[in-house]
Each structure stands twice: as C-alpha cells, then as structure tokens.
Image (tube, rainbow, N blue to C red; front, top):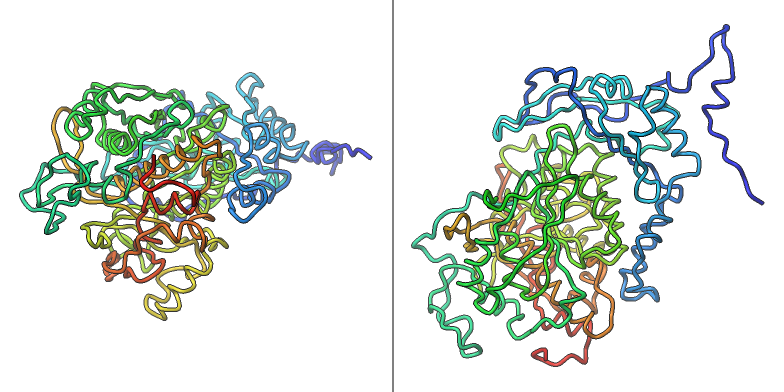
Amino acid sequence: MRYRWIPVFFLLSAVPLGGIAISPWDGMRSKHSWKTIPENWECSGLPTTDTMIDLYIALKPYHENALVDALNEVSDPGHPRYGMHLSKEQVADIVAPRPDTVQLVRSWLEHHRVTSSSISVTHGGSFLTVTAVSVSQANDLLGASYQLYTHTKTNETIVRTLGYSLPVVLHGHVQTVAPTTFFSSLLTQEQTPRKRSGVAAVRSGKSPLGNSVTMPLSRRITHVTPAFLRWLYSTFAYVPRAMDRNVVGVTGYKNEYPSPVDLTSYMRKYRPDGIDATYVVASANGGGYDPKNPGREANVNLQVSEGMTYPTRHIFYSTKASPNGDVFLAWLNAVLSQQNVPQTITTSYGSNEKVFPMDYAIQACYLFAQLGARGVSVLFATGDDGVGKGDCAARFTPVFPATCPYVTAVGGTTSFTPEVAASLSGGGFSEYFSRPGYQQQAVSTFLDNLGQQYSGLYNPSGRGIPDIAAQALEIPFFHKGEEIFAEGTSSSAPIVAGIISLLNDHRISRGKPPLGFLNPWLYGATGGLKGVNDIVSGSNPGCNTDGFSAIVGWDPVTGLGTPDFVRLMHTLDPGSSNPPE
C-alpha cells in the first residue's frame, strides 16, 4: 500500500480562528542563539540594504540512522560488507528527506517572496541553496538580526546573526541554516612558520636512513625532510602503481592557494625524482586561484603531501571565502556533488568546537560521514594549542571538525628513536559528540588510568581525539621562493594522509577497494593497532594546566601512535612482500 504525505501547512492554513486564517509560518521557535558575541569578534555595524547572502538549508534525512549504519558496515573489517562503498546515487537515496520536506520548505520560502528561480535542490534533495537573498529578507525568514562582525585578530569581517529561528512546523525538517550563527573564522592548524634555526629539532647518533638509501644526509637531523619521514614511517621502498585510480585531495579556505613554482623548488631539493610534480585545482563555491599570491597553509599542505606520495595525483580544492557565505558547508556540498571523489582528503583547518553551533557541527559531521560511506579517508589536524588556549573558561577546548567521529583526527609528535608527543598537539574530548563504539575500549582504558585528574574540565563520555599522530615540528617548505619551517599539526595531517594514500594505492593496485573511513580499522585489534608506534612520553599543556600525558595505549595527545606503513600494509594484506615490490 502506498501512502501520500499531506503537508501539515495545508491543513493548518485551512482552519480559521476568529475569522483569521492561521499561517503555519507564524509560530517561530529558536533554532540557535548565542548569549554573547563569540570570542574574538565584535560588532562593527549594519550591512548595507543591498547586501546579499546565499543561504544553505540542510534538510533532515527521512531515515535518520541509515547512513551511519551503512558507514559502519562498509568500514568494519569484520563485517561482510567491508569495503563495499556506496555510490553517489546510493548515498543520495539514503540521506533523502521525507517526501514532503522539500515542498514544505519551498512553500515557506515562497511565502517570504523568495523566487523559485533562486532555489536549487542539490545532493538528492538533502540541501536547498537559496542564492542572492537580501539581508532584510533573511531577517524576516529567520527572525534574525544580521549585522557586521569583525575578528579582532585577523580583521576579517563577516555578516552573521547572534540567533535565528524557524517556524515550529519546520523544526522536524531542517537541520541547520547557514550562514547564521557560525562565526566562521577557520584557523589554520599551523604556528607561525620561521626561517631555519641553528638548533636541531630532532637528533640521533647516526643517520636515520643508515645504509638503506644512497641519499647523503647529515648525521644530525635538523629538520624533517621527506626522506626522513619516508624512512621514519617505512614508506621509502614503496613505489606507487595505481596513479590513474588513486587521488589525494588537499583543501584550501580563506583565499589560500599553492604555488607551482614553490612546489617545484621543494621537490627539486627534497624529492628530485619528482621535480615534475603537479596538481589540479578544483573550484568549490566559486573559489579562485592566484598562484602568484600563494598562502603558507596551502603551500605546506600540498608540498608535504606531494613529497610523501609522488607520483600520486593531487587535487587542490579552492573554496571561495566570502563574508556573506559559508565556506565549510559550501565545500562539502560541492565535493559530494561530484561523481568521482579522491580516495584521501586532508584538511588542516578548524576551530574550537564551542564556536560551532551544535546544529551546524552535527550537519557538517553528517556530511563527512557521507564521504566516508563513498570510500574517502578524511583526515583533520587537531590543532596546536594542546588541551586549549588561555584559561579556557574552566573547560578544555578541543578542535572541530577533528572531534567529528567520522573523520580521522591527527595529532603531533617530534624527535625520533623514540618519537615523543609534541607539546602543541591538540587533544581532548568532544562536548558535542559521544564516544563512538570503535574507540570505546581504548578510551576507557585511558580514563581508568587518569582517574579524577582534570575532573570537570572535559567530557569523559565524549569522542576522544586524536586518533593517530605524526611529526609536527621543523617541517620545511617553500613559500614565495623562500624556504621556511612549519610547526603544527597542519603538517602532521598531510603526512598521515600521504601514508594512507600509499596504502590505498597498494590496495587499488591489487584490485581491492580503498580504505575509506579509517577509524574502525585503526582501532581494531587485528588492524591498525598492529601497525602503529605507541608514543609513551610527552604531554599537551594548555588552559593553564599540564595537559594530558602520552601513555601506553591510546591517549588524547598522540592517539594510538604514529603509523608504520609496512606493518599497516601487512594487517591489510598479510601476503605482501617486505619491502613492497
């Protein structure tokens, strides 16, 4: 039997009360609001009457748990469906809203004189994009008060509101609307880079490469080159073979672009076999590309990834940074609309979880889950402030999107033989997302050892970060023709992404699917746990505390540890040669 959905507003609008028809759009209820202006922002005036914004309206799925159920199945090595990733169309079917949702939201928009030509439905109907909405119109739609806000440190100015509402009838249909209350100062997870210092960051009594390669290296390692990283994480002998089917995506925001000239300089010095390395630029939300004015973040992310994976293909995503728009959801919507997506995507942007409205964070995390279901390994840096910056208002401040349980969060280490936790490594526990099943045992063991220390400063039932870690200090890269050195998990994320990309290459070249969402495999007793180097010393101070300590097993400083490519490869394919052929 087939049922026909009857939109509620048709029924309501037909019921008179005292001779006046009741509109379903009259009863408004708050969706999200801030009590005060978010930290580091100040109101700087009103937008002009002709200011236009594009609204992204994320619709709730009809089958709320279907996507996460499918993601868990295709990501769990013990499940019969492991590796059977979904197509774009299959994901769109799973996340589709209720049959009446799109029409209901359209009717609300049209009630406020939004023309149908400015409304587009994307991603299987789960997103509505409304272009060129005037600020006054948006205020009426959302019961909002859009104003100009300027960031006190970056001088960035955006159009936002401290609160917004929706008609009661829409609350069960709409997850979030953006841009509204997310004050989107996405921060790069990189401390101020500097010119080469005279002090070695990592030392050893012998060359880290020994006699395994012919490349001459100083006996005192003063910076973390691609050769050093490839030795440290056991990728040196591996030669990619699936270059036509394996791609790494590097994301860029805030009008940051890489420079092909700087990439060539980097590869000439550190990967001379890859001097012809290149990349493709993909525009998201109208993002531009100006390689003559490159950004440091874009340069270090791309160069580190290329140095780890050459000759693997790379895509750099340039997402338009507009004061009147939302870059995060814009990028996610753009990449999910593509038929073919990279097997690995690395991002070194984020901000304190508390600055993200919960409805916004939930929606963004849900979109990352969609990427995972399609076979994409999504990696995020955990930040460079340890457990948090400043006094933290009596709570530690983990970084989102790293706290999303459907991405792999990457912390930082330094030194070697042994590696130790980098004090800047972001780590902690989410206030928004509960602890996922895949890390239940690992995190519980850490908390048992922690006892009552820091009780009340973190959420003991929250998703723990990071999941894994890599080198974060003395990372060389070229910027505007000059070699400088990065410090931060901004470099750690593309290092791990490079290793994951090589694992994907190995699998794809043998006719197997890519890894996709990594965490259920990483935390598995027969999976990633057998292929990581446990980091057992160091800590991540912050919030006027000593922070958490790295201990045996998982910890909120370095996660499970650092990756060993060969050992990880053997967990996936026990018959692989060592070193790889």
